[in-house]
Length: 265
Image (cartoon, rainbow, N blue to C red; front, side):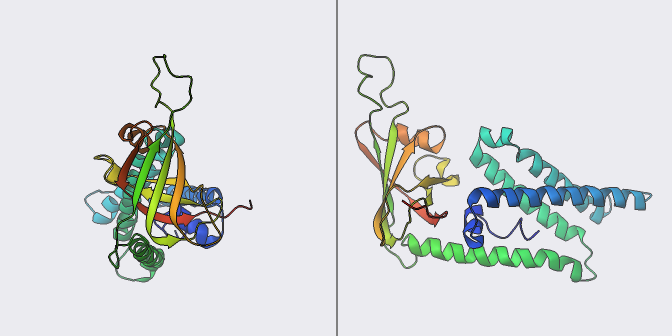
């Protein structure tokens, strides 16, 4: 359980452990499959031990809802569903995890606090890490104490010089350059990335927080971050549509990070 609910972001969890994001993601997935196997064993033992199973009993009802949410969580974690819409998958994943932990808490006996300690400890770590992460987010983005909000200038360049006279949209597949002006300097090392939240891009973008690799770094802190993006779908496609070709569009952008291990250059 401690490997499933320690931080809201796996990138932050990986940095705390000193692991790569891919390794941390695999550890998280392995812990989830182990929890699913233990749940299946628990269900088999409980069904063999009980002669009757009534959903009118609250403990049984909470157990069924919790088990169903975990099964749905594991199914939606398959790559087929992740590739359809990653942001929808991520929010659904978090919501199902919250339902699962709440139903597990309600299912456990309330006569003794000892069984619930195994839930309270990882949840306390989660609340503490989230609180610290939110404070850092507010400070780095000039919200607490109040400063000018960070903004991102999105520049769209032509893909090539051979698109003149063709029916192909010259901006189709064109790379984007995002320059983020920070209210407070940030130290970013080579190979690290930041999460960018741009709620004003579209109606649904306030739910989207995308990781982008930083292409500008220096030995000291820097006031501006440069990001190069290949427009695909979702937020990056909306950015390409909003930014005029060979022009610039500006949006309010909030930065979280940096994350990831540095690479020698």
